[in-house]
Image (cartoon, rainbow, N blue to C red):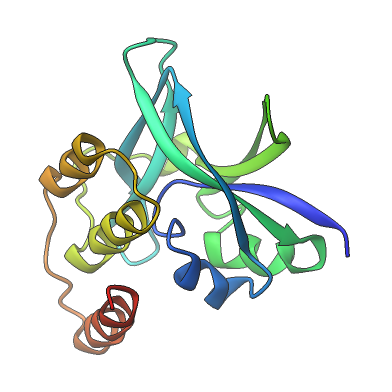
Length: 168
């Protein structure tokens, strides 16, 4: 089976969340990217903010993420789930220990710093970060990000239900 390396940094951090989209996903390593920042500013199709990473070239900035192996045949499903070509574009990095790795980066046309994530979306990021034991200060910074309630009741219920399973 041909595998690809995928870098998760947002709601896909948690393996159970990612495996709903690509069942073959297996965590390989926790990584730290120096000179990058995590932001909640990518406009989602639901009108809320989603995660993005931006390269700052400032060595004080750090993003923590997880490299996953995924089956190459499942990448189209992940592309659809992530909205490739509809707000996210593909970006590749060469990571010293893991080789070529891809991730999704927000297109400039879909960045809006006035947006906030839904509280359940932010909770996915926090739960994934906790699952992988990311630094407490990093998790704390994510927890401090402003969030809003999702006014779509069924989507809210569905995501809270999944979050409950993730946190057990």
